[in-house]
Image (tube, rainbow, N blue to C red; front, side):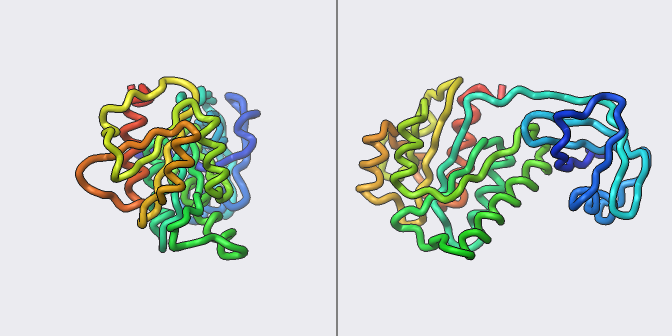
Length: 247
């Protein structure tokens, strides 16, 4: 049996077993026109905040569906909360990073305008890029069937990243010159973990000094140097595995 497709529905919190609900708007049109879902097929409606309504299509219209709710599943927020501060990469590599980090379970992505980032988000271009990251996270969350969808914040300056690190229960910076391997990391099993990923040109010495003064510790992945668009996913995989979130 194929896996039920997932759609965002903001009223999932109030859905009850046995209710009949309508999926319309952009999500309803996609379900009806693109996915061509028909009566009797399974559909999941997700709030993105831990609630999933498991439904069956009752009526399929050309641009909306009526669904019968069979069950409502509520999943507690995962802990520790994993945030990745991602330096802005060039091209579409940022979207690739957001997509893969969402798939593995990262809870928040923070775009960071690092000193050596080639790309800088300004004005309309910045808004467009941020919206692309958020749309990518949303679609990846659906595809990976996450109950809790990640947030993509507004771009942060280095000073704002420092504040995030100061507030974290555990603060990490990935750096190629670090002496401590990330593989040996003992990860907190509760609270918040913030991981900083630098740009292609690396984190500058003043940035690293500011992060370490805020309580962060520098780690290295291994003998090779990863692109910024893959480093976050690789490092977050280690953190998630060692945090107990993967069992």
